[in-house]
Length: 74
Image 1: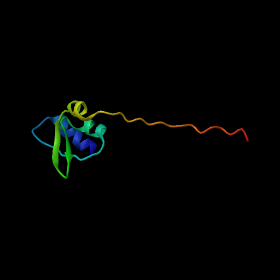
Image 2: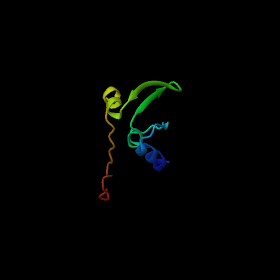
Image 3: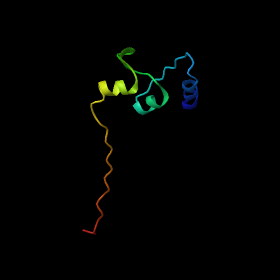
Image 4: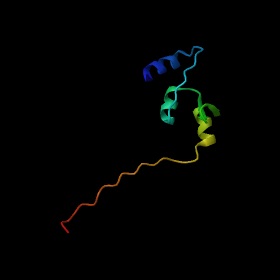
């Protein structure tokens, strides 16, 4: 599906593709304009990825992997 949407996006013809996702990275990769929908279809915000990040991006996602302590036999 990614390749189909990417091809449509590169053609820059007058068309629209609506893709629902929870991944901002996926939305940025496939679309030039993004929207945030709430309550089953009402748009809260519409614009470029940077516009949406500036308006709603107030936090960071951090992934931490902790290596277990090695046992000394105690």
